[in-house]
Structures are given as C-alpha cells and as structure tokens.
Image (cartoon, rainbow, N blue to C red; front, side, top):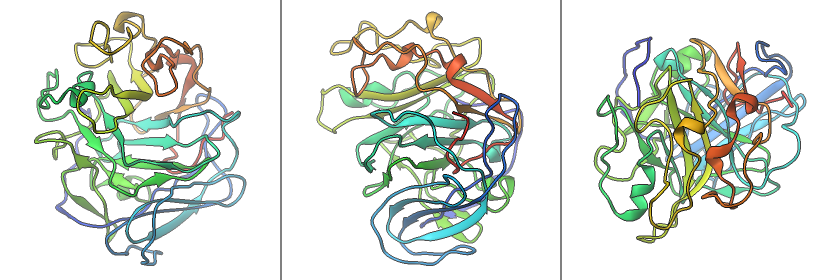
Length: 334
C-alpha cells in the first residue's frame, strides 16, 4: 500500500542488474553509520554500471562484516560498486531469512533489506514479498485483489529464478529509479517494478509479477502504517503459503495493512491485528532496522516456515530508528 509524503518522478526501465551498498549502522535508535568498505553485486542478463564488470554467474548476496565485504544477488551477469560501512554481526544465528531494514520516504529512497542469518545460501526461487494481507490468496489460486485504499500501489512479487542470498549476507529491493541518487550512486539488487530499472547506467532486474497488476509503476510503501510479508510457497495449488518474516509499522492500521489468516482453512490463527506490536514508522530520510532476533515471538502454533507465529513478534523492540539508512550493509547493532 502506499502514499508517501515525498514525490519523485519515474524513469523508463529495461533489463539487467546491479547492487546495493551503504554506510554502517548504529547500536542505538538514533545512531548513524560508519566504518570499512563494502561491495555489492546483483545480476541478470548482461553486466554494466560504474565500477562493475559483466560476467555470467549463479546467485548470492552479501554485504559488509568487519572492514570489508561484498554483496550479490544474481540471475545472470554482474555489476558492483563500493562504499564505506561498518562491519559487525547480527548476533546469534537464526534458522530462516529475516527482514532487516526498511525505509519509506522519500519515494526514491524506499527499500526493503533482507538478511540471511543462516550458515547456508538460501535459494529465493519460491520466495515472495507483499505489502497486503491478502498475499496468501496466491496459494489458493485467487486473483490479485488486495484490500486497499490506494488501488495499484500494493504489490505481490516473486524473486527471479536463480536468485539466492549467501550465508550471513543481505539483499535489497528498491522501488524507484531515483534510488541511486538517494544513496550516492548505489543500486539495490532488485526493483519492485514491472520491468528492469536503469540505475546509474546498469539495468537492475525487476521482481516478477505473480499475476496481472501484482506489481505496477506505482507500487510502494506507505509512510505512516504498512506491512511487509516475506513468504514462501512451493507453487502447488492449494498448499499453504509459509510466512518467513513479517514487519508492520505505525500505531494505527487499516484493513489490509496487517496480516491475519485467522479462520482461513489450512492456517493457524495469526495474532489479531489489534494485538500486533508494530515498529515505529520510519521518519523521512531515515529507516528502521532489526536490532533484535524476533523479540517475544511465539515459537509454536504459527504459520511460519519453522512453525513460529511471525505476526506475534514485538516489532517495537526488534526494530530501531536509524538516522542514516544503510541498505546493502549488514546491520551491526547487535
């Protein structure tokens, strides 16, 4: 769902790749980043972009830890770029992917960052992202008809075939062509866009639409209240979608802006929307980032990929405000 308080124009798009990097992150809710070098790569088709080299490869995505690192996600060729960033870890390993940082304003600066805290690469072929509570209807064979006050702004996208996230690394999904201007020439690994996006001279691949209208040129994140669900589905009709990680923000919500599969055949009850504890809404030009491993989350009886109730996490404790967003750089605040 969307309606940002900022507005930036779109640029025409096409087909290919690049990467996401950023400066480091702080251990406090208001801290800024700093530190070592970081390199990020994403691929599909042919290579390009400042500081990048083209090559064919299969996929992974990484970002900094300590003083140096690299970041990549792939569906074909490679392009890379560098920047400064602090290193550091995210604490104890988890057993599934986690949403690690998001920014919502200005429009050009919107992004979703996903972290792989496991010890193995995670293929993304059957992974999806959505910002609407009707996401699970994909697995029921239903058309994309999201509950929304802003038609055309909600999204349901699938990662391109061959994409994956390397162990203990991150990938970034951007939304608008102005991303590279907002983040000093850096690019995300993918765009939530109908087609590939030109980012600093390289074409960054688009997420894949699941059906007509599931990704549009207007797709994006709402500033004051919203949800993002990372989920997995095997593509077999009428098998359940599995929640992987969930983030909702803001102190108020509306229909469609918080996940709730309670009463749906084949699913356990979710935490009711009124009882979900959202993160603070990211202020303009800032972000919220994960600084706790699923604080307070119920570990059984849920719809999660590992049986957790992903909607039960205390997101107000797990996420803190980052005054300088750090897309593509693994968080250091734990």
